[in-house]
Image (cartoon, rainbow, N blue to C red; front, side):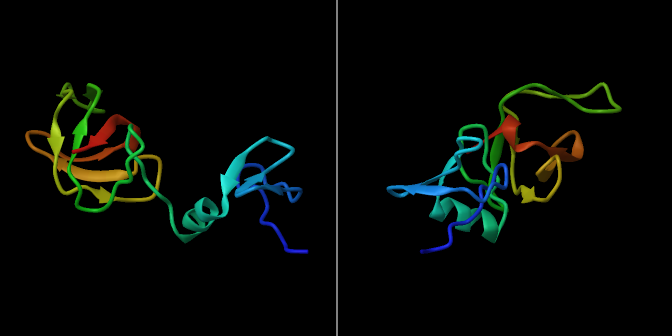
Length: 112
C-alpha cells in the first residue's frame, strides 16, 4: 500500500485517491499530486486572473489603491514593470513612476 500525502489544507492523514485526484474526507479539499509537488517546491504567486507571476514581469493595477501615509492614489490601469516577488502579506515589490517604491498584493494586479 502506497503512502498518500496529508491534506495541504487541514493536515488530515486520511486522504484517498479518486482517479488522478487526491481527496480529503474531513474538509473536502481536492488536489492532484502535481499541485502538491509544485506547492512544496515553492510558493506560486498568481495574479487576479490566475496567471502565474515571475520576477521581472510587467503587471497592470486593476483597482484604485490608496497609498498608506499619503494622499496619493495608484490609479486603475497603472502599468508596473520589473516586479520582484517576495514572501509576506504583500507579495510584490516594485517601483511605480510618480510614487516610488511600493509593495502590492498580487490579487490587485493582472499580468500584461
